[in-house]
Image (cartoon, rainbow, N blue to C red; front, side, top):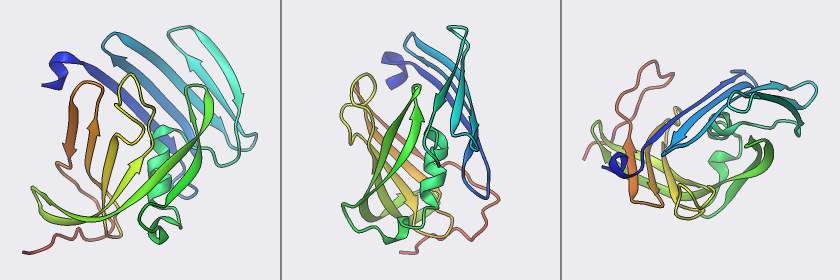
Length: 188
C-alpha cells in the first residue's frame, strides 16, 4: 500500500573484498517519487580516495576518505562480522566511517538486545539493531529503522522494519541458500 502513496525504486549495490570487507565499487540508482540519483563510485583503498561518476549530472569527482571507509551497503556486511559486534551490551553502539552522498559521515549502529521473532521458517533467535538514519525525506526520525539479525554464526538479516515519513514498512526474509552454517529455528 505504501507504494501507492510513495513510490520508491532504489537500487543499491556494493562490491567488496571478501577477506578484508573493504569496498572497491558501489552503485546507487534511486527514484523516490520523482527524486532521482544515479551514481557509481570506485574506491582506491591504497590512496584512500573514491572516484564518483554522477551519470545524471555527467560529472566525475574524486574525494579523499579515511582508511577503512565503507559505502552504505558494505557497512552492513562489515559490521555484522565486526569483532566487537558480539561484545555489545544493550544500548551500546559501534561507529564507522561511511562514504555517502559525496561525503564521509559517521555511521552508528546501536544494539538494542535479543528477541525471538516468529517467521515463516519458525521462531528465530535474533539480535536487534538500530542503524542511525537521516531523518526527513524518507525516515520519520534517526532511530526509525530496526534490523533483526539471526543470533547464530550466519548473522543474516531476518527482518527490517521502518517508520517512514508517510506510513511504515516491514520486510521479512523470504528465502535463503548457500549458508555456511546451519540455520537455527527454535521449537516451541
